[in-house]
Image (cartoon, rainbow, N blue to C red; front, side, top):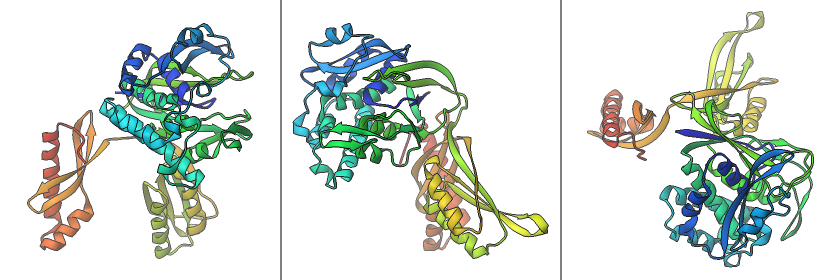
Amino acid sequence: MNVAYFDCFSGASGDMIIGALLDAGAKIDALRKALAPLRLKGVEIAAHATRRCGLRGTKFDVIERGRAAQVAASKGAGDSGGHHARLEPLFGGNPRKMISLVKRSRLHPEVKNASLAVIERLVAAEAKVHGCRPEDVHLHELACADTIVDVVGAVSALRALGVERVFVSALPVCSGVVKCAHGLLPVPPPATLELMKGLPVVHSDAGRELVTPTGAAILGTIGDGFGTCPEMTITRIGYGAGAVDPPGRPNMLRVIIGEPVSAGETDTVLVFETNVDNMTGEEIGFAMERFFAAGALDAYAVPLVMKKSRPGTMIGVIAPIAARAAIEDVFLRDTGTMGVRWRAVNRTKLRRESARAETVFGAIRVKRGTLGGKTVQTTAEYDDCRRTAIEQDVPLRAVRRAALRAGFELAGRKKGGRTS
């Protein structure tokens, strides 16, 4: 299994993502073959080596058929202008026809499903900012053939490189304006900003659009984790060039591909802690409920002795990076603390799979933890076990043991495959 980390130090767009993956070893001919089921007429893809501020990378383009030689001849010339500007919108900007094209195609099932998830996310964001239903959205720049190619091509290239998990750095945002079909819009454009919801961002002083809607949709959909680079043994590095070549900074997207160091899956989470001596048990319980509602993965309270020998409680929370603001808000509003400590930590975990196991008491939901495709842990869902024990008037432990036994037996039949 390979993992990939997209280092978005200068932003991200669809063509930069594919350019980086081609630079890391994906083959352009294999990409053409993967895209062939779309049967897009009048366009072709091309890629060539170029430089941005002296840094070598690969520029990927979707162009009018017959212009590949002209684009290749421009290598190193700055590649001014974006590849979206050269193509006319498909289907009159109707997203339903765009989605139908992908659904009807004979793309690999994994590629098709992931591509549809990206496109639907893109359409939903446009609908939100325009205040209409997704089926009523009219796409302008995003209905071009290169949007479909960028999405399907990125998913296909990752699959070709054997990448199973994707991690993404914080996305850079800055101020300014950009000219769109609706006129001058703030940077990031509203749809792009909507696509960034739930993702970590950092400020940049570039003064121009750094992350495109397509780039945000792709990374936001396929990304398994956001923030720092996961532990890995690096095997490939690629740089994808953007359309423009501004002075002073390389307009590149870097992808780092490697093998995970740990046998389990790794990600980065935040750990929050604070010590309080002025809360009742009921108030602590209420705060715990609020933490989980805010997106906490776990929350706990530990008794301790504080200064002046006062009894107190350490309240701790583990949460995704994207939930930081919401978790801090609960700490500062619903606990007796004047501040909260937090830190980013890496964790290693089993791959989790959900299934329904048939027992003598009926179907019980179970969670399986797999390592290297082999089930090593199984847990039974407490709510299912509790409900069954009450309904059938049997001991809870009997239901739980039956569910665990059935869960391991199910894992053996599935050979580590996903069942949900």
